[in-house]
Length: 441
Ligand code: ATP
Image (tube, rainbow, N blue to C red; front, side):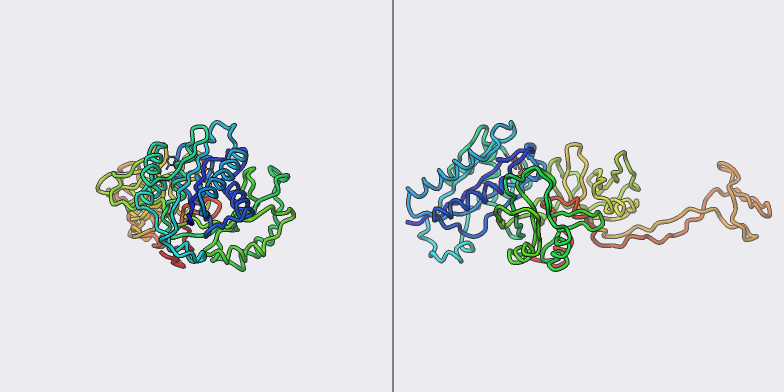
């Protein structure tokens, strides 16, 4: 009797190294070496970006493997659990791995392995839990309850917090998805400067964009495929299809060997973390939203170069920020004025400020310059003193009226969407190019 085993893994790495995707790639290669078929692409699922104990991008992984007997299932479990034990950074306080196995009997499906992936249906309670883990905070107990209700086996190392993400990575619905190809370094090179031939990244981008995206940030002179942490990844190429990320890899050259490569299907760049909400007052901290409102006052800049504005609707108001790392985006955000009607996309952090990932200008307000009136002699008048009206510097004529003339000025902004550069993009955030080409939008 065939069984399909869904395997979820999370919380194996730390800021000093390792990466759960790498552990997943190692385990999958090992299972393949033992002759166990891996079904479809492994998944890299990004969860709530505000989760408290995340190391970096709050990613969790899952994959599916086929077994023919109870003994094979036990072998598969042992291989996986041993590797997790061996490769996880267990000595780090905040590394608390979790592994989940969810077994499905295969008599309901015919065994055309190529087609199997598209026929699989997961329990709705698991899908709901997973979607909730992308958008909200959940507890280890929540994960245990759901795992128990569907008969999934959980394995906790230390506190085992990783079961939260491991279960979500198995069950996350992917109505929209992208791919990421990850090339891993030889362990001997970990922690050293990555030796990617940057001109080949430029060439790859020119040949494959927009099917691949976020390869570079030309304005910032930033190579976005290269991580800046001591993790095992040499580079990650993001794209719409597995074919285009493979093609892109064939173009990128490096002066160091690649140990292995894995392609993940992922919820990255799909905006799955954002919930559309109709009232500002209903938004909470540590969650991400799409919300419409009117700019309450012209933006101001705070220390560090962050641009802040207040957005309001009938229900309340919220402070929104375009932070310094968003560079040119911040300059655009700064040009918004009181009265502009906008839709913001982003998440609310610890201090209650919404971190803007992109925004849409629905309607621009009229902007005015206040200038002194013209004198009947044709000369622009000057102020005659506080509340004393105006005086003509040429003919000396005075008027008592204090009001300046409002002159409409042209706005440099246009209605439409604006988003952050690749260097500042969050993993889940959907770039405008994806919205424009409209894949499953
Ligand atoms: P990397 O991206 O490098 O793999 P990470 O940022 O994914 O690292 P983890 O080491 O996986 O960080 O730690 C995140 C922890 O938070 C995991 O234990 C995961 O199970 C848990 N977690 C994920 N999402 C939530 C959530 N919505 N609520 C509570 N805990 C969560």
